Amino acid sequence: MLFEKRVTIIKISKPEQKDINRSLQWFGNSLGLFNLRDKDKSCFRIFIELLKASKAKEPLSSDEIALKLELSRGTVVHHVNKLMSSGMVVREKNKYMLRVENLSELVEEIHKDVSKACKDLRDVAQEIDGCLGL
Image (cartoon, rainbow, N blue to C red):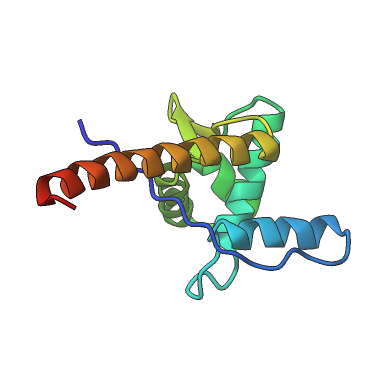
């Protein structure tokens, strides 16, 4: 079975001021949670709601998220699927939560995913180099 995770990391200068809202915005931007089409920052707002739910250890359904954020269920499902494909969110009995309890752990998990992907790339590159006599 092929399992695919799509992780986006964007190198952006850290905010100079210590402000929780700016830091969260920077964090979300650095993980590619915003794009130009998401004008009301739905994905980021969903991410924050899931962060709160993970801290409380209470997964949320797409309907619960939609109600809390005044979004359509379709919008929520679209963005939750994006967050699941990145490996940041997991589904548990038709409810969603971050795969870990806090952002530090999330970064560590993403780091492990990226490191594993780079190791696999290096292994295959070495195999190809060997076949090509490089």
